Image (tube, rainbow, N blue to C red; front, side, top):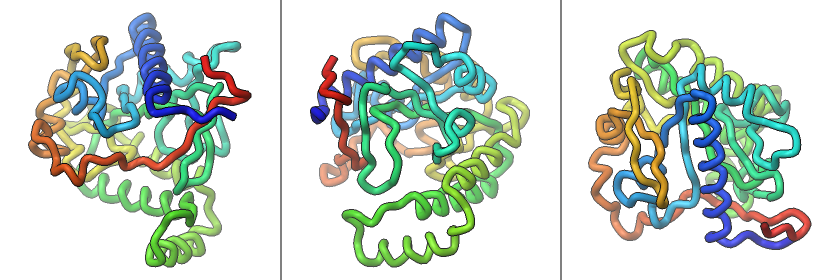
Length: 264
């Protein structure tokens, strides 16, 4: 198999993003950039220079409709989530290129080079987010491999795996998904993208997601929430300020290859 370079990785991700955005525009499905991708669009008009993934989100109803309708026979761009794969172990979906293999070094499983697709939901209070963060810790402990981890983390993960032995990673991810689905976007004063939350800052006024505007990302315009500045400041603080140089590193650890030396 041929290894995928960082430039090839970004090209694949951008193709996935473009395909997803085109499908949404053609089918009346709402979507918007989120997370580091949204920061990149506003601050850099593209990737954060040290970033290596793409994050988008959709209101829950649109998210579910996208998952039901996106996959088509013969297309190597596919979406996967808890309902489409019984071995899947994330509380959000991924759109991936099935011509590729991507191996997480710290977590088990392979989906292929992908972009993350998050649902946006109503949020009751900070306690709900704290509950999801706790469940995420359980899920991470269940999925974690031991490679390249410190002795202390290996010990913690060992105890975590023993306690979680009766439950599958898919089951724990489903618990998170069920918690996120409790409140429809717009049904409560607060809303957010909470399937993998940084913290209570994810909870913002629902008006943030009332509509969208377009912003440039790597030479193309994509939708961002009309209240993107409010949302980003709530989650990240002064997001326009570059972090210290020693923090300008990727948080992801993976290796990727083309299947059967397919490079196009």
